[in-house]
Amino acid sequence: MKMKKLKPTVLLIITVLLVSAYSNKVFSQAENKANKDTKIWRYEIECAGVGNDGTYSLKVWSYSKNPTVATEQAKKNAVHGVIFKGFTGGGAGCTQKPLTNNPDLEQQQMTFFKDFFADGGKYMKYVNVSGDGAIEAGDRMKIGKEYKIGVYVSVQKDLLRKDLEAAGIIKSLGNGF
Image 1 (cartoon, rainbow, N blue to C red):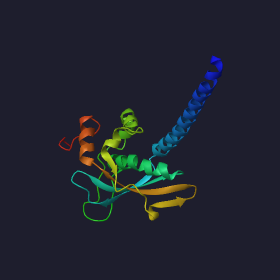
Image 2 (cartoon, rainbow, N blue to C red):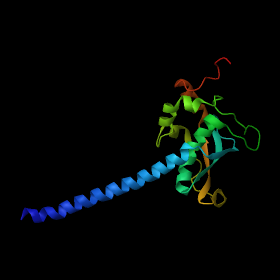
Image 3 (spheres, one colour):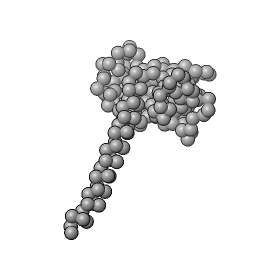
Image 4 (tube, one colour):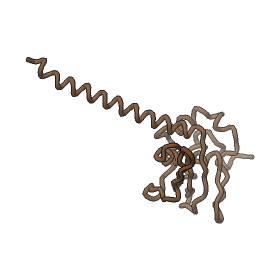
């Protein structure tokens, strides 16, 4: 008698476990794709105007076969660009050098930056998607088999610099030349 009552419960538990495992696999695959796209750091960054004191207002163009991945990666790309690339753009005050002038810094501090740019990593502290995160029609382009997505973001560059200096990753502006 007890076996008959257990069967539906056991089937329900098995079903829940299978659905959960499948969901985790799909999420993990999307996460791996996002990390693969980011690992090669293929993006364009430009000044989008003057931000509040201590912030940069940027437009970041990210590439991916999945437009949602490209949109999410724009945040990582924006912070990466502020640290390593710098950017140009129209208007006064829109050209900025990167926070570091050491071209080998990312390799030298590989462990730090791997954790820093991990999904949900510390980079999130410094970046916000501007507006409601909606992508304008002209900022979503299909190029071959992938998308080029333009996203407006703001980066808290003063806080980012301060934290990277405190961690010993970059030299402070007051440090001798």
